[in-house]
Every structure is written in C-alpha cells, then in structure tokens.
Image 1 (tube, rainbow, N blue to C red):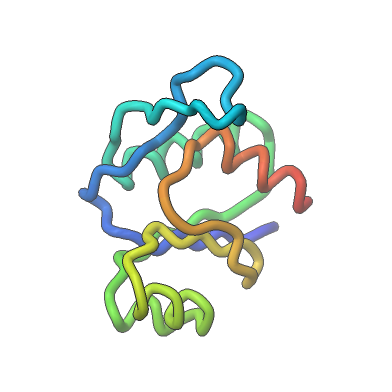
Image 2 (image 1 turned 90 degrees about the vertical axis):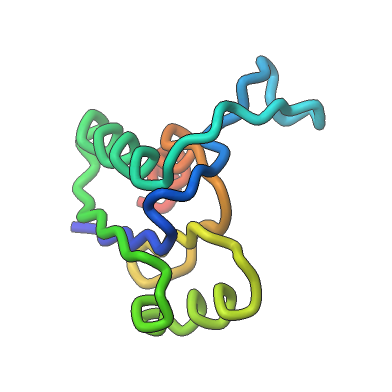
Length: 110
C-alpha cells in the first residue's frame, strides 16, 4: 500500500482545476476555488474508483505537523506553498491541485 500525506489548511480555498479546453497551451483559466479538505475528499474518492491502493492522510500545516517531513518543513517554513503532497516519503507536489490531475501523477509513480 502506498502512503500519501497532504499538508495544508482544511478550510482554505484553493484552485482545484483548469476549466479551459486544451489546457497547457499557456491560456489556462483557473477553475472555481474549493476548500482543501473537499479537494482531498474528491481525490480519495477518485483513488478508490481507480482501485489504487493508497492510504491518504491529511495534516493541518502546523509547525508540529510539517516537521514530520524535512522537505515539507523546509519549504512551508519559507513560503506558503500549501498544500504539500508527499507520496511514499517523497515530495510529489506543491500548491493547488486538481484531484484528477493528482490521480494521474500518482499513477505515473506506481
């Protein structure tokens, strides 16, 4: 089983996806903002749909919690780059994320 730890602020709204067809051509339009905890829930649901065996844990980005991972601590202590996402002990992603895009990134690392 893989482990995915997400460090962020549960009630902070972040961009959850691009709403523009053909995203990636430099003309992306941010999607509606959603609470971090709602994006994490969507992500967990998509992992289950894809039958990806992963345990997801969400941690509020407090000093005590970010100290659990040295890279996360170093980065989040210097700047607000939440959420920080760690998969199997390795920093995977920083900042806003789309649940679908994050599932794609997880699949690439399996």
